[in-house]
Length: 180
Image 1: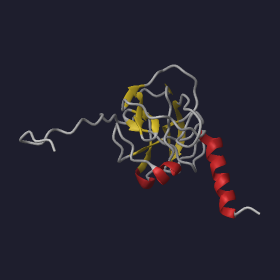
Image 2: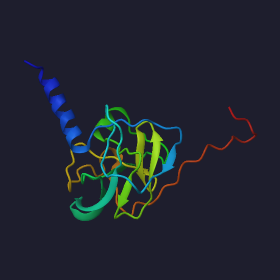
Image 3: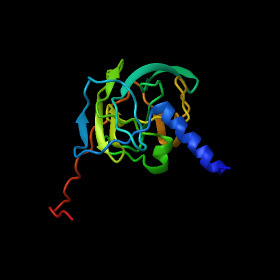
Image 4: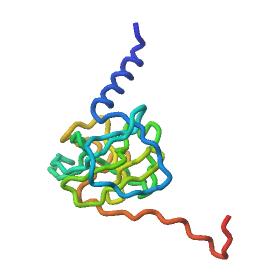
């Protein structure tokens, strides 16, 4: 008989793979690249084994905090979130947090119904998709049309009107010209 934790863990991985696809994208040398508007739609999340595919970011209605809003979703209709501590060039979602909040990754994402800028940031999570500079994530417990992660662990649902954030600049040299 199998150990119950192994069976439950295997079921959890199967659910994540079925819902959003499991891929690992290789990090490139450039931190931010523009996204292509061409390509097939699909989603990919950080995980093990396969190559990244194009990810469609589109709009859809969903109930957020008891109110119907237009939000950003992935190709499977799952709500997309941004993590407040992230910068335009760096994700702070790694390890166990990234397993619960998988990053949306793609080499060539597309956008439908959203007027913001979709880009790709090469970081520790691979080729992560950003909307107006905000790196995007899903929540493993969400379903299409269901937003359960609003405000949890500093994650907030992404909307088409998400205010752009600028890429972080290199730190300025200290006064006096000494750069330790």
